[in-house]
Length: 311
Image (cartoon, rainbow, N blue to C red; front, side, top):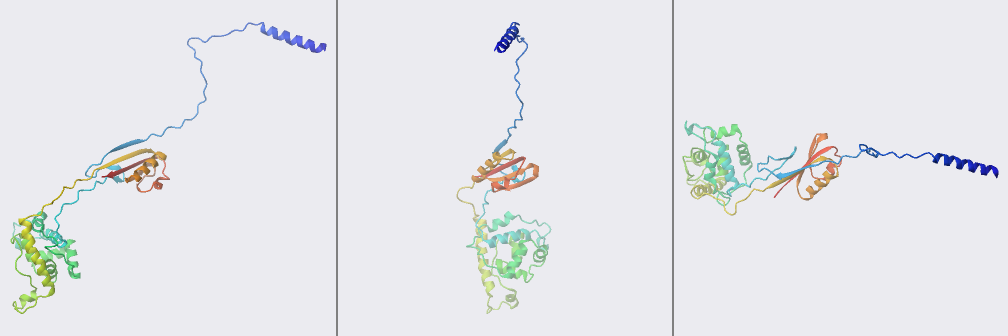
């Protein structure tokens, strides 16, 4: 008991001795600041995206992304309602008249396509009828339309009558090769006239009992159409009627930045709105047309997406 009391008195004396020393409080100088130490952690950078938008050039020159141009639909061609046969004849003669024939003379200049159109613009399917060609006629027409030089020179560069090619030509178009050159190339004849007969008719001294072959009966029917539609084309040219068509306008949008949710959300919106979409994936050196959002699921790094729509 006495030892416990002695211990307590000794401890009390030690504490009082320590408290006897004066406490000193320092003050911060005016040029000193208290600094809080805050641990530095890596803060992720916020992705930056660049957006652009605008109107597409009418000549379709606007690049949306590297592999996608803004294709502005051209105005529908305003063309007269000509039969297929009339269009084929125009196209063939536009090429054939460029082949020189001695019959044309040294000052000959091939007429422009517009000159041929001025002779045929009223040759509608009702006046200048279409017909199903025979195999031989179809082959000839295809070769002439494909501008087969040897055949064109054979038929239009020398003698006009070159059977069997000239026979196939005249029974399909209702027009002899020489007449076609006169009407369309030399323009020495304003129209066709008379009837169309095979070589056998002329070789038979024009026998009155001669029966015209069926293909020439049909050919004269086509010829009658030319007799009507050529002067009608020149005297009463076809002109368009009704409201004038206007060209569609197109707009584009682009978004460039890090591949991820921002990009896929925008592409999804474009696809749902009927835009034409493309994506330029920079680090892969890849540019593609996008029709489904899963095409971008594996994309990483910088990506440019773009879209356009016409209305």
